[in-house]
Structure formats: structure tokens, C-alpha cells
Length: 199
Image (cartoon, rainbow, N blue to C red; front, top):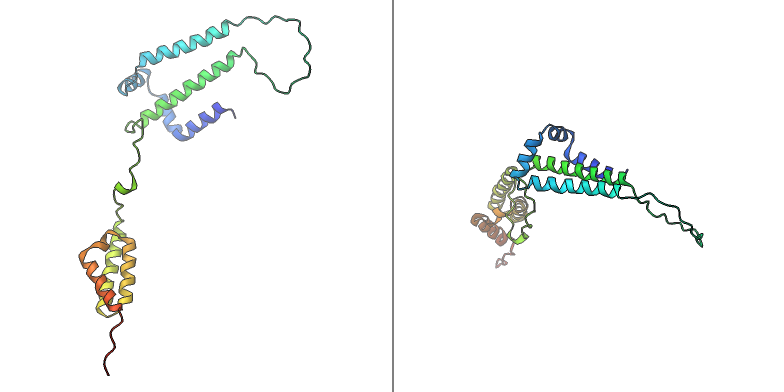
């Protein structure tokens, strides 16, 4: 598969047949109106394309027939093949691929008008918006904290801290709530060795 065919197949795969069908149904006037609204100078682009095609035709017409010239035989044959000159068909194929790529770009731009031409720089992690846990994660964290408080009231400080840690994994922001901080402190004090009772 040639590079042009691979490019075309990639564009087709990316856009999909339905979008191609829809783009094909757009009239020239609609496409020009859309491109003008998007900031393109349609007349200037058309003039550039015409100029390009004329230069291709002029290049093909300017070629003169090759005359045989007597030459000495080369010392040793080379394995490298030199590209053939005078292949206007290749130029036409390249131009057709460029036009097809341009048409695919118009289709893409038509389907994705809200996207900006240049991506915004990524937000540094330190200033990124916090990730909010899903509602079911928040509910699970709240239930764990409730069960941790009950375990702490029953004197099971180890269980209390384990459940608080599990809740923190589900909802990190909730771990800084004042009642959770007090509960952690209470559970941690329950883990400290108690002074021995006098006998």
C-alpha cells in the first residue's frame, strides 16, 4: 500500500463512512460558506490551487523529447536506480492525494467546529482541578467512616483506623473533615499503651 493510500485509509478510518457520505452531500456553496466563516480566504486558496495545477501542467508540457547521445560505457554498473524524470502522472496522483486530504480536513472541520486549531497547554498538576470521586465512592466512604466511629466507640481502635484509611482511599477530601480528624485522634489515643495499674 502506498503512503498516499495509507494516509487515505487512516483518514477514512478516523472519519468513518457516514461522515464521508455526509461531506459528499455538502454543496460547494455550503462548504465555501463554512470555510469563510472559519476564517479561510476561499478565493485565495482556490487561486493557489489553480496556480499549483498550472505549474504541474507547465512542468509536464515543458519536457522535451530525449535525444540519444553517444556516451562511454560506465566503469561498473551501479545497483542504485535513479528516479525516472518526466512523470507527470505521479504529480497528478500527488495533487489528487493533496486534494483528498484537503477534503478530509474539511469534513473533519465540519464535524468538529468547537475544537480549537491549537491545543491549550496542559495544566500543571499542582494547579489541576481536584478529581471528585464518584457518588457511589462517596457513599461507601461515608459508610466506612460511620462504621469506624462505631468501632472506636466500642474500643476497637485498630478497626476504626483501618476503616478510616479505607475511606480516605475512596474520598481523600473527606479525610480532612473536623469530625474525621477528631475520630482519628481518638482512635490513635486508644492505641497508645496505657500506663500500668498499681497493684
